[in-house]
Image (cartoon, rainbow, N blue to C red; front, side, top):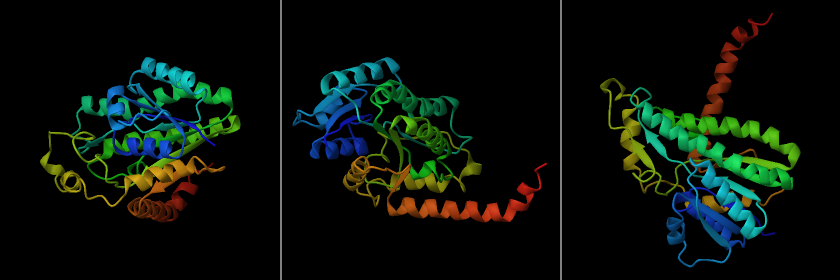
Amino acid sequence: MSKVFFVTGASRGLGAEIVRAALERGHQVAATARDAAAVAKAYPEEPANLLALTADVTDPAQLRAAVEATVERFGRLDVVVNNAGYGLVGAVEEVSDEAARDLFEVNVFGVINTLKATLPVLRAQRSGHVLNLSSVGGFATAPGVGLYGATKFAVEALSEALQGELAPLGVRVTIVEPGGFRTDFLNPASLRTEPATIADYEAGAGPVRQSMGANDGKQAGDPVKAANAIIDVTEVAEPPLRLQLGADAIARIEAKLDLVRRELEQWKHVALATDL
């Protein structure tokens, strides 16, 4: 059955591949970006089932207008894909207040703004599916990308709560946790690096800072396969709360789960000793 998708950050990277995969399967897509012209440029064939819209996720009014245009054009809204966002490299102390707040404004409040614009439609329909793009770094972060990881941890937290709030209304929620995929995420268009460095953090954050640029274009993940996996999960009756993508994501998440379990067992006696 054809569905109506609303995708943020749709002009490039994984967002663009999600749009293409949805269109190829016959779905209808409202593809948003800060400039609709960038979306139109990404899809020069101008398929009839594509609606290119300007919607900066930091602008609630633009998002509301985009949702209204989507419903007016397609009559409903079925799948919301919160994909817009960017990365930031820098040790926690190195990241300026301005850079940290800008990052949260897009990666966290941008998701909240999009949800507030789209959820009234899904609630009224008593159906729909929200996919929030997190990262393996939203489950197991690393030195040098702590602020980026913090934004994705926040997305995971609000998504877990959202699942419980929306499930009684027939709306599903899935957190997507990609590892490294060969998109433009590691180039300056999507990844920002704090210019100020502190020598003491060279051993901890330095290797990550150096590896980011070096790995651009060398990631193991295929974004076309990732996009199709994401569309697949919108077509099943019982989608998962979390969807990991990539062997590297699986390895990092399994390692984190093992660590949490070991420490839980090691310190459980302390936890239990604090009850009345």
